[in-house]
Image 1 (tube, rainbow, N blue to C red):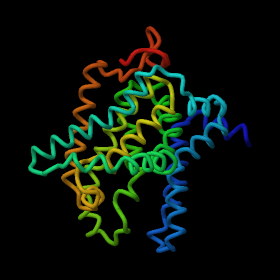
Image 2: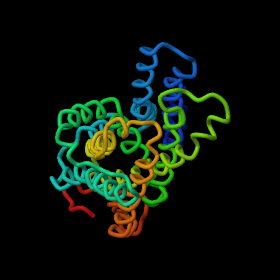
Image 3: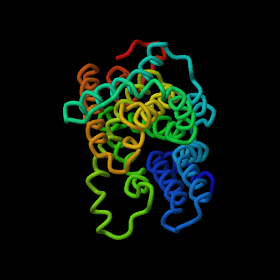
Amino acid sequence: MRQQIRERVDAHPVAAFFAFAYAISWVAWLGPVLELSEPVETVGFIVGGYGPFLAALVVTWLGSDSVQAWSRQIVDWRVAPRWYIAAVTLPLLIIALTSVGLTVVGTSVDPGLLPERVTLVFASFVTIALVGGGNEEPGWRGLALPKLQERSAPVPATLILGVVWAFWHLPLLATGPTTFHGLASFVEVAPTTTVRILNIVGVAFILTWVYNGTGSVLLAILAHTGFNTANNTLVPLPLDIISAGDSTTILVVTTVAIWVVVAVLLVVTHGRLGYEAEPDTVTTPTLDHSSEIQ
C-alpha cells in the first residue's frame, strides 16, 4: 500500500501538493462560513496558513524525495550578501514606486508618518514570517517551484504556480474581515479580488527570481515577509486607510508597481528569472548559491 502511494505521489508530486495544500487550508478557513467563535477562527486562520508547509512535508514524506534535503533549504542562509540586500530592498522599491503612483493619481502621501512605525515594522515582520505569509514558502517555492521547473521554463512554471497560489488565497481574498453571503456579494468583491490575484501572481515572479538565484527557501521567506510587511506598514498613508477594506486605489497602484518590477526582471534575465538549466536541457536547474544576481 505504501509503495503504491509513493508511486502515485512520485508520478504527480505537484498535483498532490496542490491538493493537500488546498484541502488543509480551506478546511481550516471554514470558521467564518460556519460562524465559529473568534478564538476558533483565529486558530483556523493560523493552521490554514501552514497548509502549504504541511502539504509539502506530507508529499515529500510519502514520495521518494528526502525530507532532510527539503528541510535543509528552509534554513539555508549561506547565500551571497547581495541576495539579502535584494530581499530587503525589493519590497522597499515597490513601496517607493507605489508612493509615486499614488501621488500621480492624486492621493496625498506623507513620508513623515513612517519614522514612528519602526517598532510596528519589526513586530509585523516577525509575525508575518511565522504566521502571515513567510510560513507558506517551504511549500510554494520549496517544493512546487523546483518541481514545475523540471518540466517547464521559468515563466510558464511561475504562471502556473502564481495562479494556483493566488486562488489558494480565495477564501481570504473574497471574504475580507467577514464572510460574504450570496452571489450578489461575490460579484461586488470580484473586481478587487481579481486585482489581488494579479498582485499575488506578480509577487510570484519576483520570488521565483529570488529562489532561483539562491536555492534558499529562507531567502524566499524573507522576501515574502518583506512584501507583506511593507504593504501593511510602509505605505506613507494613515494606517486606518492602509488597512481599510476599500483601499482599492492602493491595491491597484501597488499591483502596477509590482508588474513594473517583474517586467524589468524578465527583460534583464531574458526570461530566465535566475534559472540556469544544464546544457542542452530545459529540465534540471543548477543553482549557484554564491552567484551574482542574474
